[in-house]
Length: 249
Image (cartoon, rainbow, N blue to C red; front, side, top):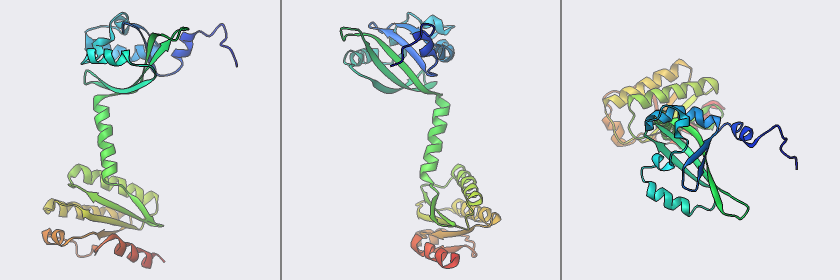
């Protein structure tokens, strides 16, 4: 096993990791932080009434917890790595890994706290929104030149814009000729929904993709005041896929 050279200190090694690392003693007082943590806590320190990151050295970690007593009880029982997501003053969100450091006698002497994937609260909420949008409107490849999009829930302006931009990108880059739009998961129908569907159809036509509507329930059919007569509809996805296979062969 290669040994650490004399010109490379442990501090150098911890600074090179690229994650924010803190060191706390058994009383949970902050005793050290690496350069990455100093950069992060330069932004966080003012939230706690401090000017600089270095001002936090010597302060107790209780300041970072809304329920410090509960956190202390958890730390006393900590024998191995513990991972938790924390919210700092409702401004930053981070995945935190706490590891007890043991001495030669096997007793815990310090705690290392590593903060990973630190984002602002706004960035975290935006990331959640994008995840929800992608999960609620997946674009599924169902044939060589065909995709299916099962719609679920309400189709508002934001979701329609996201769907159209994502679907147009998929159709142009993937040489998609048919897009199956599954309406069986839609339960709220109004004039706005009809307009959104027409907008989606027209956008697909511009890139040479045929829009096929499947899952048209009787309730949905009766709710439309306007429906594009040129838009092909099918009872279910199987019927729409059979149409694609017949015309794509």
